[in-house]
Length: 207
Image (cartoon, rainbow, N blue to C red):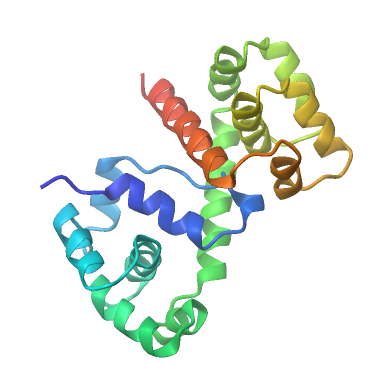
């Protein structure tokens, strides 16, 4: 049965992150997830069974995040039952000795290194995606970092606003959440578009 390795990994981390960190998550490929998290496989059927028991997809993904990083082998439903008692994901994570903030920081640092290592290919992909030249995109990097540029490209695409204007918002000190609001966009739609950009970047790098 097909596993939701990449999607669940991506969404579970995203749900524990602020919207300002909307795209600091790496979309792991099938083999990487299988190798690193062999102790936890969750199938379509398991997800559907949990939904039938009254759990939401959002809670299932959060429970997956905790199970994936717990030292002991745990199933998602066990974590969901504890959450139902505590009514707090922070307390649930502590109960299973999972330091969410530490994991996020480690994850984002690895992602930062990924951007640094593959900057040239990422810029080239964004040039094709945005219609801007690599030279122009490099100019933007004087004011924003590369992962923000990826999110800005997604906002530009969804709002039909020139990328230069999105960068200008950032230069004016506006936060990501504020920029998305100004452009009258649904944060989820920006996340989905940014996720698609990430998938394209990883496919391009793998070639």
